[in-house]
Length: 490
Image 1 (tube, rainbow, N blue to C red):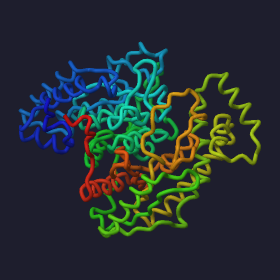
Image 2: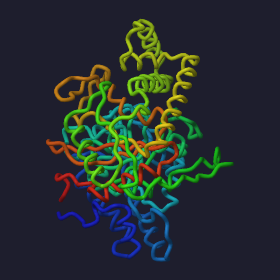
Image 3: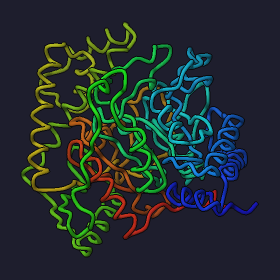
Image 4: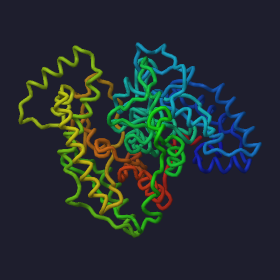
């Protein structure tokens, strides 16, 4: 069957086509449904299908368009990470004990995208508890990378990245605390944006069976995913803003404009590797090629700066604070074991694995001290962004690796240019933006020699999300962007 001319168009392009009546929302929705039914047996990105309601919403969108109504996402089909509550659909976070939990109301971000006119096709697969860079669980099975079915699509928003790469609608939404937006975007060759911490209200992105209350999950954010950089801004503008029953009682969002609108005006610091966690030849190569192209386009490039916070120290701090937050919900026996193991660590052990273990057992006193360290780190970044507009750096050290579902992640290994490294140490690169809460846009930059996607992240200043988004958009426009996987170019 020949592919539709619309299957891999951007949301911006599809909005223009809908407005011009060149295509209908029902046609776009049916095209995405047909692709899911044709291909998803091998990808397994869509774990919950909601096609009947999607087609009804598409009919309503077409009627609204015919009346001359205009909304930012009107008539656009999209997918949603399984972890968001959608009324009438299961929310499990991949936890077998919660397989029968049905959400009673939409999460606030779902309400916002629906109000903007979107058509939700269904929910995308996740790892157990959203806690892996692979997307598999005992309820819904394993999601595969559309560029190589034997490899991970990333996680925990891996179902969303795989859906985008396979042509199941132009937009999706995910979440990120350990790279869960940026890593799957990197592994599947699509785009994602980790917003500034707190920019997008998260009510209803809630592990079951907890009630959907306003709640600050330390380090964690939700954000947009797409096949085009401009689409990220379109979706972020719909999602962003305080919760109307919480901070929204007093505050309104007013994001500053991007610092620049032309490549030649940007000042960029580029990092391609670090001894804490080296990057492989393919990742370094794509960063260096992009850097050369940016320099030719007039971007002012620096390859090092004394203003850059110490990567080793900030990575250790991130491991402690991340695991302090995640460890708070560990089962009592696991927590007790981790606490005993942390107490037995020699003081001289400052490996990232040791810091993760210490983090699980962190006392409140120690957490307060760590939080003070984070405040100082944010101050360092503020000074850096007085000189630079953005930092370009790796998302992960290697392209997507083969599925590895061994239960203890600390015992898993990845290979970087033939040398083994501890699997969870990969947290270091996403953590460069996560710990200080900075915005970061992941974008594809090409392919490794074996055909797997690779890319970079652009870290920007606090609450200046439009700056890395604009730079990503300019890079896409100048040097190219998303390329569909040959396997799905039918």
